[in-house]
Image 1: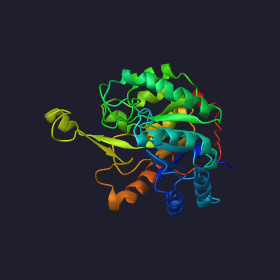
Image 2 (image 1 turned 90 degrees about the vertical axis):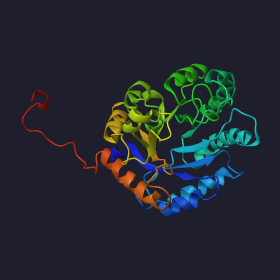
Image 3 (image 1 turned 30 degrees about the horizontal axis):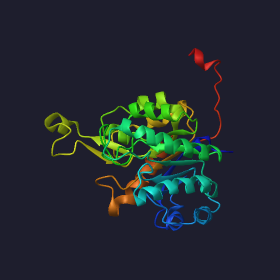
Image 4 (image 1 turned 30 degrees about the vertical axis):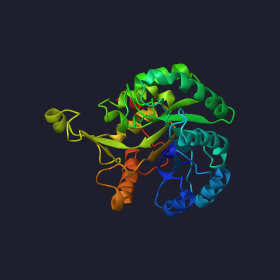
Length: 310
């Protein structure tokens, strides 16, 4: 019998720019992850993505593990050498997603550097209208991560899709059905936005979910504000932050989301470096618990009549 709990899979991200994605997948494929998101930072470094996809699939072997989403993170709207690499990387990921079994490519929108969000919309429309068509022709969705990368409304270097007001703008510029979000609560909490109502409002645009959380230090905010010398928030691995992921997964299920929650590590101030995989394994078990724990087949039985009347 199939496991309906796995309509939302719990997995992790795997760095791919350095050519070691397949090796890394092979190393951790038996640790309980149900999905992987191979991701590139700014460049694919000229890798043959068809060959890389085959090696990643071979590393998974017969295990029940998927790679529904590839990541391509950089700034495809600007014209420095690495920006051009990022734009080409998006095209290559779209064209080769099927070699991984992926149906979604995720990353940043890019941004006209140092300018307000509105000043990026023309270039955004130019680039992403073409990429959206290229992706749609291959049955691929595009998902923008909601990370500000230390930018704000007035200025930034990487991404304009970090604020719900900006989502309204970009989806108006590109109303394509295959353009949406790679959503996570962390990046909203960093800016003191309540993430849960976003699931209900933006559910039809959530194509992929990152497993990353945050701890808001309310005592620091009360004493020092959000621009003082002490950090008012920490990015966290799920299970160590403030988010109730049972609520997140409940809202995702109620909204009909089917896909993966892939853990984004390397940010937790405690569970990093030598403790990185300790934190990720805790997150894996925690998120599976929030998903409902061990799947028990069967609909159950009630012999007292209509239970809705109780």
